[in-house]
Length: 303
Image (cartoon, rainbow, N blue to C red; front, side, top):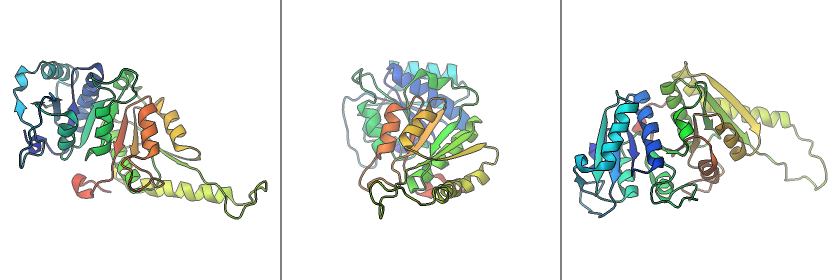
């Protein structure tokens, strides 16, 4: 199998027969239905790795009809999302390698929080962690069965801080909200401490109103183009002085999806995943999409 078999902008989901992967599969089927995209269901058998030139997945494909995990997966998709065009791939190779290669063309990669080989107490399995770190497209991690039936008005929550990674998160959040008919809550949590030139024990006499206005303007500017592109998406802007992790986790309790960039404007350049996205990913009570900054040419939908 070569990654050119993955349709551009499609939804790709990894399955292994575990309860977590079935949750991911059902969420992915709903995503594919809403986006009007094909769904690629991949089961990596993890028995052998074969490196071949010009085959980006680097693994041979076996007969999907003989794969009980895929047979069950396709039956579930046919029941949950009968209108979705699904393609099954049974691949001999490692899940991380196979799914990461598929992400080069996919629009969204979906995985469960823990596979069948994960330690029960782990909040996030090794495969899902590696996919978030190395995927070339947005990765959605599905943890809880409640993700499959969010309330009708449950919003898509996106963390905004003005960084390049944040811009990608905003793009994904608006597109997903438009597909699902949901509102967007754009969260900009900022923490500003007046340290320089202030003596310990003396009150700061600066203008908090001015700082708050500046941060609110940054949020509005980050959303302006997307508001124009998706005029039917209701958007609520929330600019608050606080901890972004705390604020996003609080919003996740009633959300359909939380979207974060891989690194914020305060992150270290060498890090593949920032502290905010890591902590939200491990503790949010709804599915989390982690979006890495990408060249506009891949999506062709910049406002």
